[in-house]
Amino acid sequence: MPAALQLKGLTKRYGGVAVVDGLDLELERGLCHGLLGPNGAGKTTTLRLSLGLIEADAGTVNLLGHVLPSGSGEARRHVGVVPQNDSLDPDFTVRENLITYGRYFGLRTGTIVGRIPELLAFAGLEGKADSPIQSLSGGMKRRLTLARALINDPEMVFLDEPTTGLDPQARHLIWQGLRRLINQGKTLLLTTHFMEEAERLCDAISIIDHGRLIVRGSPRELIKGHIEPNVVEVYGEGLEDWESHASACCQRIETAGETRFCYTGDPQRVISELEGRPGLHYLHRPANLEDVFLKLTGRDPRD
Amino acid sequence: MNWFPVWRRNFLVWKKLILPSLIGNLGDPVFYLLGMGYGLGGLLPTVDGVPYLNFLAVGTACYSVMNSATFEALYSAFSRMHVQRTWEAILNTPLGLRDVLMGELLWATSKSMLSGTAIMLVIWVMGLYADFSLTLLLIPVVVLTGFCFSGIALAVNSVSPNYDFFIYYFTLAITPMVLLGGVFYPPSALPVWMTAIAAWLPLTHAIDLARPLALGRLPAMAWLHVLALLAYGIAGFMAALVLTRRRLLR
Image (cartoon, rainbow over all chains, first blue to last red):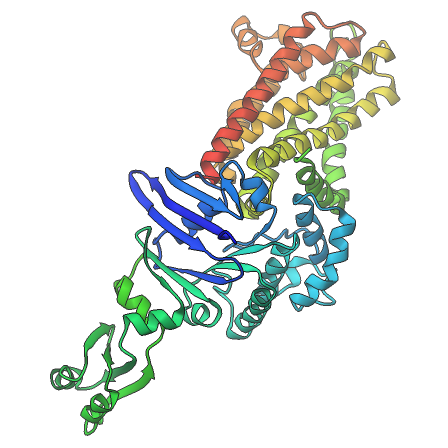
């Protein structure tokens, strides 16, 4: 089966600067794909190119078998999009939002109305059909945006930071919904700044920076292949003195603010080196996707 | 017909807010017409051979069509484009920017027809015309005028950073047009250099088509005025298409 989305040598320049720079990516159908990268890495531009909203300066996009940009309207007929910014219609109720949006796909009103109960149940918005948008919480609005993206029963769903700005409870509800979509066999492409989200949901992760693909693999492969298995985070009084003793048993030490991250295959030695230093606090944990991300894209802040 | 769901979305919102919308679009021009027509008209002898109210009514029709098309394709369209991100949401569906702008153009035209129709009703009910059958030709003039100003306003909208920017358009284009175009008095009352400018303005073309029809004559050089209104509207729409694409989709 051909890939859901295939990008080849994709390049987009703004004012001479390549925001997407020869990106090659192939997303298999039926999987959840995470697209990660620091701010300005080219994630949103990649999504917009992949949807045929903007034209590439070089390279090709094939979305669900349609060559873009000429086939973008036809391709988007089978795609759902959850944008980063709220774009629900504030003058409409929940039901009217769904009906109006469905009509943009050329669906008949009767068809849309028939789908609404199922979509509201999916989004946990039963009984809210006639509520005005202003009465919904931030989490409800995001769930409605997700339901809206499913109005055309899409094969593939694009999600641009679907949980940014949500509280943990609301985030878990979105995750539950996305998990169900994955189980239904839909292809997902997700950008996020929450590494836990990507690690939990995604089968395959692509990390991009400066518009280029840095690495691709399952969360487990990335953690196994790119980073030491254990991390000891240390902070507090006497950090420098400890560091000078401990550096021998850490494969790598990184600094973020006032915390040292000691990456090691032998955490017991590091911890024993911490004993007798009451001013220091530490946390020992297995390495995760965030450690990989920070190693590959650097710890310097991006804006 | 891809534009139709966009038109229909705006229609649905309008239907929900119908009362304030109708009062604003219909009440305002009618009150103006009656107040000015009687108040000022009482002080005047006939204008162009008819009572001032008759003269003013058809000018007000064009004026209010222009105003309501302009407001819809500026303030309301800007809200949908910039504030509510409605266009952004639509562009994620199979529809394209051309469909969105066409829907907006035809919606603003439709809404302006409503304002035009309100004044037409006053003209018909009060008998402010010379020949009823000629006033039926005012209907396509109203549609054309609404189309023309909707197209221009969408172009202005596409380059607006914020709502305040519209002041430039209103002060530098709409207001001079109202004063030079012959809404309140015949342009022949103006100095020659002012009428020379007026000859280029779209509102002048609309009024040059409409007023003779209300006063019982066929307009002179009607084809020129029709072409001018079409040209302004199409040019505005094409510019809006290019500039909005540059704004939203680059």
